[in-house]
Image (cartoon, rainbow, N blue to C red; front, side, top):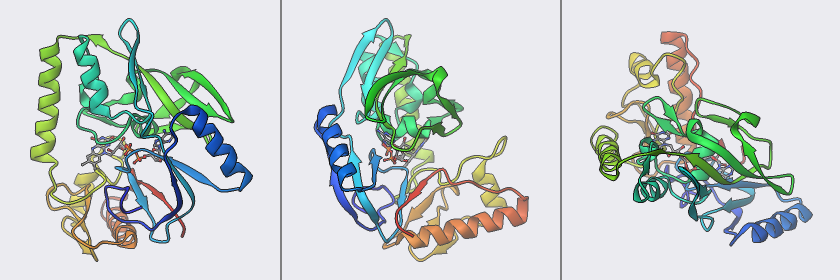
Length: 278
Ligand SMILES: Cc1cc2nc3c(=O)[nH]c(=O)nc-3n(C[C@H](O)[C@H](O)[C@H](O)COP(=O)(O)OP(=O)(O)OC[C@H]3O[C@@H](n4cnc5c(N)ncnc54)[C@H](O)[C@@H]3O)c2cc1C
């Protein structure tokens, strides 16, 4: 899995499946069910830490589900495998905007929805009208009022797969969206460019506080375990400075959490999803 995750660590999965369409996906799931093989759906692995012992079971990538279409006045439906920036660009072409903040968030719509990815105080689910879920073998659209979500979190039942999301946009001048996109990409290039593989922010921001400040206050900036390091550029980014293994990140994260509890009394919670065999 180190080939499929931005942290570049993690042991192998038993199977990596890339279904063609919904029918193919359903066949795959029934085959996995018959073999009692567990599975996990992933996007581009920008928020995944896979343990070194790998994953007993299958990884399902929806990268072929990448269609984007206009489905009504200011409504755009994007399949789970579409990349965030592609959706913003699609909207821009037809004079719509308002989701510029997702332009520079690396990954797919499926991953962004599951994580309620966001920036500058906004989350993608605030702009989402409905989700198309594969739940218990049935494909159905769910309005956001039917679902439980919050900061970097969407509660899904075990086995739910996000197939697509419908977003509500505003009418917006092409050039204004262009400026939003450029500003976001430039900010990330200058301020967030940590120069090494990472998964973005490793910890969630505790209510009313910035995780990076707490990590700095605990004196953890630059601390290194094996090949994993608290970035000196952005202390909520844990980076792979070369030949890290997943255990390095797990040990470093534990050190950071302990130090922050000791200095600030705050328990940090991982934003990165940690999966795989213990
Ligand atoms: C440099 C950098 C900067 C970043 N900046 C930000 C930022 O500003 N804001 C932010 O929120 N995040 C940020 N991230 C984190 C990451 O980009 C987001 O969490 C992103 O949404 C992950 O998308 P992905 O497709 O890679 O998902 P993955 O990492 O592959 O998966 C994330 C989770 O979603 C689940 N999942 C994926 N697809 C589906 C699906 N179709 N159905 C059900 N579950 C699914 C996975 O099982 C996993 O639990 C950053 C990461 C990096 C490396």
